[in-house]
Image 1 (cartoon, rainbow, N blue to C red):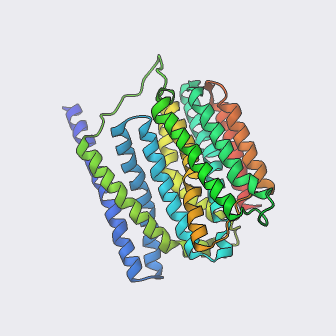
Image 2 (image 1 turned 180 degrees about the horizontal axis):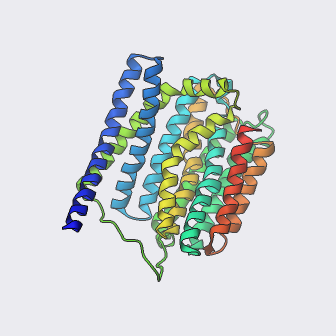
Image 3 (image 1 turned 60 degrees about the vertical axis):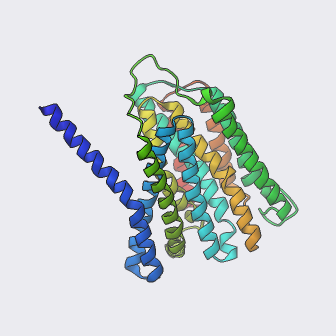
Amino acid sequence: MTNNASDLVSTASTSWMERLFVALPFAGLGVLALALAQPGQAFVLVLSAFALIGAVIAAVHHAEVVAHRVGEPFGTLVLALAVTIIEVALIVSMMMTAEPAKAATLTRDTIYATVLIITGGVIGLSLLAGGLRHHVQAFQTEAARPALAILLALSVLTLVLPRFTTSAPGGQYSVPQLVFTAVVSLVLWGVFIFGQTVRHRDYFLDLDHGGEQPSAAHAPSSRDAWISLFGLLLALVAVVGLAKTLSPSIEAMVLGAGLPRAVIGLIIAMLVLAPETVAAVRADLANRLQTSLNLALGSALASIGLTIPVVVIVAIYLGLPMDLGLQGKDLVLLVLSLLVCLVTLGSRRTDFMLGAVHLVVFAAFLFLTLVP
């Protein structure tokens, strides 16, 4: 009798949560309509901020449901694509509302923050949590090596090399260089996706551990998957619209607090990656380190491989400058974070000590962003 009552409570709780996730995108669209009707109102801006957070969480939840239906490694791809679409929407909306000079570094700051958050924060937190629970965890280096190689190439081509070219001033690329970078970014991302989903799909599946296995949840029905796909699309529309209405206020608050402009990119990246961080840590706690790494590295690759082409098209069309090249401490931190990843994921096994190293690098990134 007790078990039956517990099952009923669990089912009711799950049903309530599902209804909430279905309602959040519609609520976001309703708040967006209110924001368009009454622009600039303080109460509406606060409501829009909460609606944006709810829409992001709902989008990632619905992406996870669709991902569970299609299975791995396609599931992590769905989630990475959803997160990247949100990131692109936020960047483009803020680029179109900010002054050209102020929008020039937004893409660089956001992508840089995304790479550091993933390579330092997401991977570090996952390795630390999983290592403390399972002591030593294993993954497939055949999947990590190409992902890291492509991430290293994309990071250097988009965030480092512009500082050393001579066709345009500062850390900018000329238009032909921008087009070339956009094309090769898309090509490298496409190569990774082909390897992940077609040629070497087995590399990206979790290893069969001999010990305790996480209990596998039932895959959602086709009906639930289609509902989540529709909810995902609505949530993305809400995110795009709400981001556009909130972008001037976010910039004004950051600059009004006397913080560096790079904090704007950090806020965008943390907002987008927060739900995915939870998903990655949850997978690692369930002893599915490969899925956790697929989420992290796949999102980092999509963040550059898909964001750069879209933003380049927008920048060329609108005639906006793009300052992509990192310098000083940011360049050092990017190289350090990528080198730590190469060392950490160069072996099949990880433990909590490696996670602690990643988190220290991430803490240095946060501190030096606020106190440059």
